[in-house]
Image (cartoon, rainbow, N blue to C red; front, side):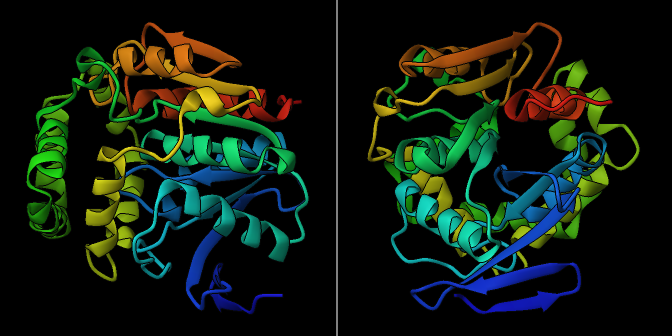
Length: 298
C-alpha cells in the first residue's frame, strides 16, 4: 500500500511512479464517497464549496489535486487517460471499493475519462458545466475572451502557453481582488450574484492560490490537454453519465453541454435557464450530489 503523509487535515499519498498525490476530505467520512474533480485553474480546496452539502446529505467528498497543482507532483506528458489510474490508487489507499465521480468545469473531461476507463468501480458519474472536446463545433467553443485566447495559443502557439498562464497566475496571486473584479465584469448577473456571496469568492481565490503554490507548469500543461485530442470519444462511454449545465453560462457555453449530451450514449442531461457557470454549482450542489448518490436531506 502507498505511504501517506499528513498535512493538517490534508494528506498526500505516494504513487507507484514515486509521484505524490495530494487530497483533502470533506463532509461525512462514513458517508457515500464522491470524488470531486476541481475546475481550472483550481485545487482540492475548491471542494469546500460542497462541504456543507456533503455534511447535510451524509456524503464523503474526496478532492484530489491533479498533477502539478497544489500538493500533487507534476507528471510529464500526462493525458486525460492517466487520471483514472491516480484515482484508483487513491481509492484503494482509502479502502473505497465503489464511488461516484463529479467533474466541475475543467474537471469534466476527467470525470469522462473515469467513466470510460473504470466504470466497474463507479456508482455514478457526473459533469457540471464541463469543458468539452476540442473537435466540438465552433458555436460550442465560443467562450469568454481569455478562454478563447488560451485555446488559440494552445492550437497555434503552444510555446507561449507557459508564459500566458504564468502571467495570469501572477496577476491573480498579486492582485486577486482586482483580477477577480475584472473577470466578474464580463459574467452574467447570475454568476456575479453567486460570486458576491459570503465565502464564495474567498474559497475560489484560495483554491487558485493553492493550485500554483509550486509553480505554473501544471496549469500550462493542462491548458494543452484541453486543446488537444483527448485520446477517446465520449461515444465510447457505456455507463450513464449525468450532465448539468446553465443556459446563462458564458464561460463554457450551453451549446458545449448539448454537444456532449448528444455524444454520450447514455446521458441524463439537465439544463437550467437561470444559472451561469459559477452560480450552477453554488446554487445546485445539493441537487447534483443528491442525484449522483441517491441521497436527499432528511
